[in-house]
Length: 238
Ligand code: HEM
Ligand code: HEM
Image (cartoon, rainbow, N blue to C red):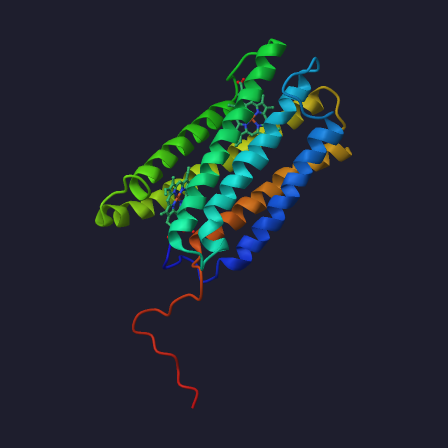
């Protein structure tokens, strides 16, 4: 959004987002590998198949999708077509990794005799990734190939940004429910409520909230200096 809704520049929020995203990625890996026993697509211990789910949903889907959203602000001087292509490709990779992550949750359920799609988390998850896919197709058709007429593009862009951020926030909310749900399952089967693992999971979810906030501000904040309002003239120095 060129005008900018808030009087801050995007750059510091992109730096904060990179740091928080890296922290969240490390935290989810430490959780699933160190505390939960590791990752596998095929295993006798079906929990290892489940573990791929949070890792791919967070690192593959959310973090890559976030970098895609911020791309115009991370490289403000890069050629617009290059930024657009990177935006489109990163979002496509995020959707594919997200789909593989969801497949792993279903695989874990099916191979363990657990029902599918019984939770709010799973319903919102299916909704979020479906809307994300629709957003991608609309974005592709309107802004890339074949591309809408210039007037239509101009009209569609604010909707693209608004709907994109809505779907993004829905995705974050889904991940938060996922962390809560898994930790609650573990705590009901005996995991220490104040133990190291419980704190790690809750803090990972908190870092994801802060990360998402930084990404949203980076997306709505202007690239460079906030332009002065129309008709405004600075007070002369002398
Ligand atoms: C935005 C990212 C996410 C999406 C779109 C998503 C989506 C889904 C879907 C569709 C299912 C249902 C699978 C089935 O019914 O067989 C599921 C299951 C599950 N997910 Fe996620 N998930 C996400 C992130 C996470 C995260 C970060 C965790 C943290 C551990 C998590 C934990 C779970 C758990 C415990 C289940 C099994 C219980 C259930 O079906 O609700 N999810 N997820
Ligand atoms: C699910 C996928 C997508 C999501 C969630 C998404 C989201 C967003 C968001 C939040 C912005 C605002 C960024 C900013 O102002 O800094 C944006 C801008 C934009 N997106 Fe997407 N987008 C997606 C897919 C696509 C696709 C496939 C295209 C096709 C090329 C596209 C083209 C654009 C363009 C041209 C802009 C405007 C950049 C500017 O302000 O100059 N998007 N998108």
